[in-house]
Length: 206
Image (cartoon, rainbow, N blue to C red; front, side, top):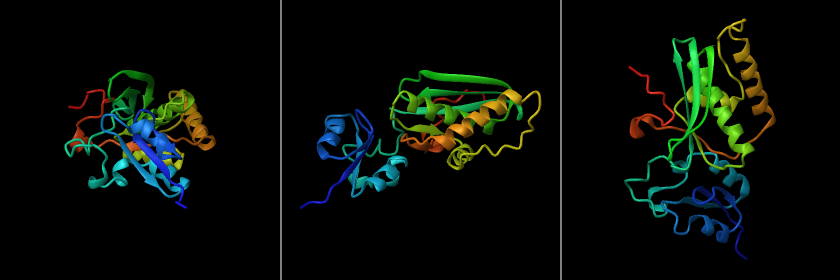
């Protein structure tokens, strides 16, 4: 009797972890450049889904993906970024769909830091996707913010005062959401060196 397998689909009609080849095939068959792989147990598959697919799929196993596309971003995904006029200074962040370049959300604060904005953008993106049951990856180009999210703590040194009270209220709500929720959407690092600026970039670099 063959062992049960679980199938991770990173790029397909629907993404996620599927318990049968038939379900996996529905999502990937005739799909343009699908990314998927089988795993022997559900826990391993769920962990892999939260990672970049390229940590698990070797070049020879990349299903129907031309070598020129193998290390490109997943188009059905959300990118997030922040910008700050001074650091600290006026701060804003936004989420932009990678393929369509549509802005999905945008927030601004009179005083903050770039790292705080990157952190809040990721949490905003994850919470929104979970609420809408949209299972696509979230890309950030900030390793610091990704680390804060994984630790569920915004480790900023910015002082909380009358000017930053509203911002810190939002930070605490974000930390509370992280503490009380899990998510299936992969949180991935944007490869700026190979892909250029993240789609959510504000384009203000000198």
